Amino acid sequence: MKLLFVGTNPENTGAASHFVALVQAMAEAGHEVSAVIYPDGLIWQGLARSRVRLYKAKFRNVLDLRGYAAVFRAARELKPDWLVGNFGKEYWPLIVAGRLLRVPVALFRHRTPPMKAVSAYLIPRLAQHFFAVSRHARQAYLDRGVPGHLVRVLYNPVNMELCRFDPQQRSEILRSLGLGEDAIVLGYTGRMHTGKGIFPLFDAATAAMAEQPRLHCLWLGDGPDAQTLRERAAATATASRHHFLGWIHDIHPYYSAFSMLAFPSIATETFGRVSVEAQAAGVPVLGSDIGGIPETLDVGVTGLLLPPGDVAAWRDAILKLCDPVLRKSMGAAAQDYVQQHFSTPVIAEEFRRSLLGDRCGAD
Image (cartoon, rainbow, N blue to C red; front, side, top):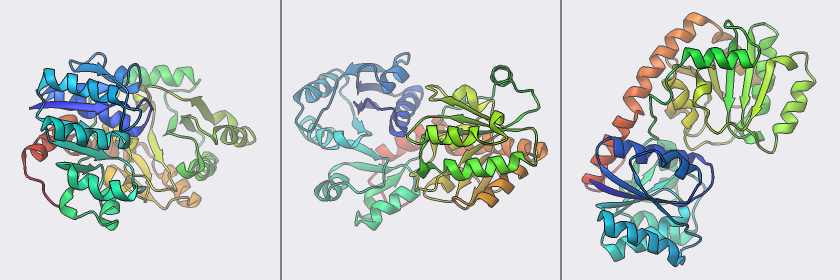
């Protein structure tokens, strides 16, 4: 199959990570893949060393002729069977290009906030395939009147090798933090803002530290509330056990340092890629029971679901996963779970079957 992906969004987002992973998954599966992407952005960097042919372009809006020119140039060379898009600003350009090129279009929607009324009605009906990245997101579109047979679910693919546990990396990261090999590391990675549940997580972790002297919290990320969180940590007796590293471009090595991952959002999440990546590294997950997060783990087997913002419940769960026997069993189960449900070969095959089949209904 020949696939032309179009993703000219320069921002560092979950949708961009999904774009890179899906492009690589389809290329690794043996399909002929090209991509029209923003020059030197996250997507470009993620695909620069792949065997995917890259074309530079920017779609500033639906009328940006330079974006269309890049798509048509790539299409003339590849003669694709499908055009694939990931970002809202390119939905209409791809639908128009698909009509002009007589090539079917597959679009992914990563957000649950509604599109403008006309787009919300027409885009799922004009695209040959419209994908949500979780059952939660799919239901949100159905609740707004999109017919069920128009929306399929395809989860984020995860490269198991990229997330593989590396004991040497773990030792190096722990050493850089001044921690011993017996440290228990609760990891958080993501945006630092209130909706992500960072403050209830901080309170829960700090309370757990009072009972578990080997527990440390490793915070990866930045955002509007990062400074407030740092100041709160500095005012506690456990300040030295909260480690803030700021924004990390490549977080994959840090999964090896985590004993457990916290995904504590109190605002709805469409999915939860970091949850899946952590489990691929053998790290059990503590996740909020909200939005698409429950779809990322096998509850009670690879991690635990907890009430969003419930400090006492999160403290107890953190202490529960301080048990090395439980962590080991959950971590092993987590790797198997991701391999079976989210690994790149699995998702690439599901995507291929979806594109080759008829437009079909609910998962």
